[in-house]
Amino acid sequence: MDHDHVDSNGRQPTVIQDRGNALIEVVAGGGLIVALVVGLIVGSARLQHAQETVFEAALAASSVAVLNGEAAGIEMAAAIAPDASVTINRTDSAVTVEVAMTVHIVGFGGFDADHTVVARSSEPLSPLRSRP
Image 1 (tube, helix red, strand yellow):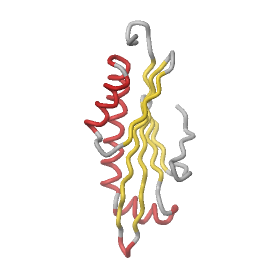
Image 2 (cartoon, rainbow, N blue to C red):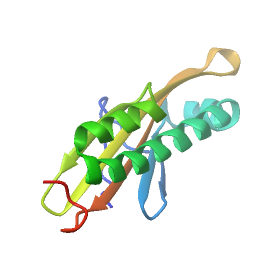
Image 3 (tube, rainbow, N blue to C red):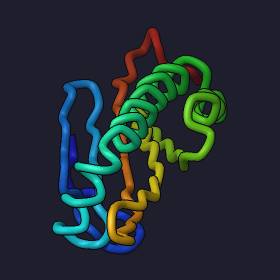
């Protein structure tokens, strides 16, 4: 899978989990120290929840998009992760879904930052599974 994601602010991911059939990236806001203090200590449960949500949304959306088209895939992702943005790209060989969600976490001493969690899932197209 492609590991070259950059979020809308030009930040690179600080955490990458490759789960085989989907890739999860966390782009920590506020620099690494703030990310460690805020994201890993205070907001780890919220970040973990966001990671699982976008992961499930990307997997479901890619499967649905292969069988029922991109609009159905977007609807599926929106049902699972209503606050996330969804992008679906279809080529002749695969459907790739990217689901991104921003989590704002406020920590001790006024530290706060936005963390972007992105999951990407790619589903290969076969002649039996592709929708015309």
